[in-house]
View 1 (cartoon, rainbow, N blue to C red):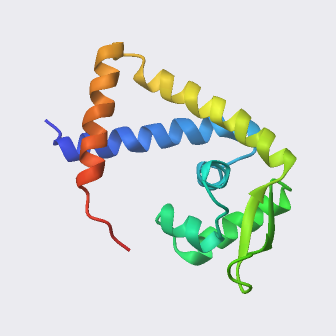
View 2: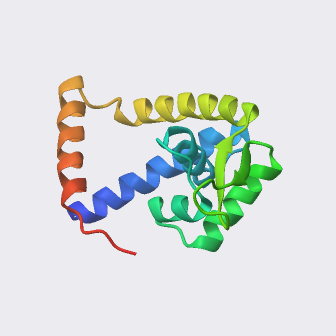
Length: 140
């Protein structure tokens, strides 16, 4: 019988695979989607370094993903008003459209994954995962 840890990792891997497959129609990877989502939902403009920290990516990886999104004309950068050496990121109009389409895909994917659970079980799962998330030590 698999351990709880193994089961959680296997489910997370499966969800990421399903999301990656679903996002392919938008020519977006799951990592690019994560960066778009951070830019779109942050209360204040973020730098690539800040996104890397939030998503637990090293700086070169976060920067490379941002550059790919800039080549796709989904993300724009401008000098930070706070730190003249840094650049803050924003979504272009095409990036905002891509974010909305990808958010719908992500929601549909999650709905599909959670289909076997009742509404009550889904709420309980959310509560338990939120409780665990709040207890995890930060790293990095």
